Image (cartoon, rainbow, N blue to C red; front, side):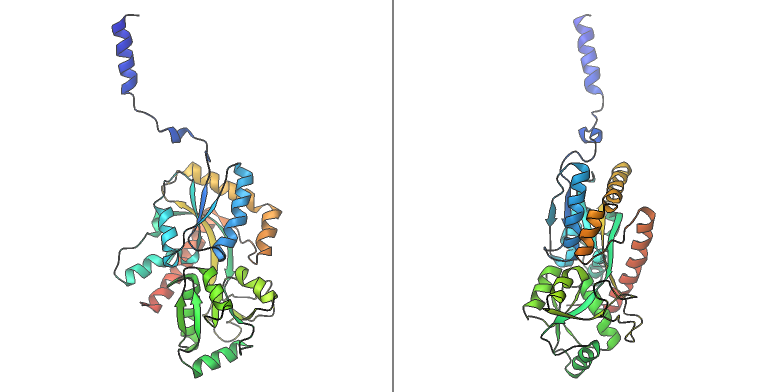
Length: 325
């Protein structure tokens, strides 16, 4: 072959479009980060850790759980919304995911992220929240709590994971239905909010059942009511708000896995199938149940429908709450 032909062939090869190296990678090609948008110790965190451990066994890749708390979850949610859409950054989100952009709208500020930047993959758990107080408090029943709150407007403080977080919205729904003036004290996540109650900085909390259950069992906290349509396993003696005459006070703190919206469909399907395999494991199901959050697994279209319906209900509740300074 003449030197001229060799040069022309090399030039032609160089002119071909380069294929992205990552497009040819099998997923996962490296560690997959699972972001929790809250500090350790809250509902998203206690669900994320056993799920991540199960995915590590399936993928044979590390799945570190990274806590990116702040702004009621908006900072971590936004981080994943803007992450590279290759499946290697996932979000274990809570039900506040859909309401935080609406809160930004109420204040006339650009949203940290929008819901359409994230793709729902699978629901892991969906639990009613539980109204808990310290065991040494004077309230032994929901009725006693309500009577005292009505007699002393603004005197009873409750903690939350931040303005418009799941824990805030649940308490705001209850306070509005019961005609109570409670003092809201926002923290950076459910873990710090629970610590504040245990330490006596506040007097009440709407908590996911998982974080609260060990403290109820050990006698440090007392559960007065739950936000479910029926009573919760592990809290069988605790009445629902519906039972106590508040038919519209129903709220669920769910945890689900999301990926950046532009993640390719085959990668999203691989993540979904792996989560389904993980959730079929008795080891993972027992771990979640032991943590106080038994599985309520749904994926694909079933999760999308659940997410859209729940989001619409919560967005309406946040619009009723209005601006919270």
